[in-house]
Length: 93
Image (tube, rainbow, N blue to C red; front, side):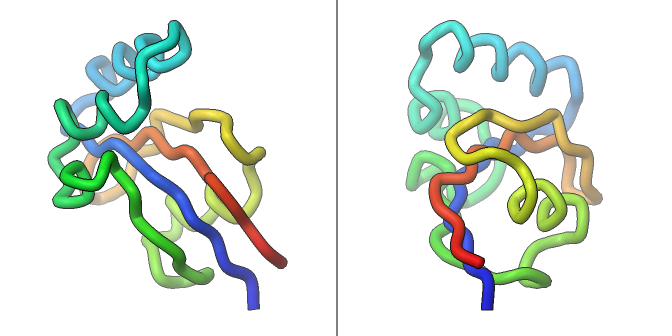
């Protein structure tokens, strides 16, 4: 079964999400930005969500994690929880 590891940043609005993505693309550390801005408990681990399989995350999140390129910041991705930036760090099929 497919597995992935990813980290993310969760915020409550799209504008902030886009601003944080720009900071990361301009060289700021993803984990540092996550720990400072993400509202998810994973922020204590730099946004690290660990390993999970398809169907363990909400659909919008799963779609990105199991299709997008590794190590590229994806987002903003809107879910019922807010807006996410996602970085997939590994994936197996």
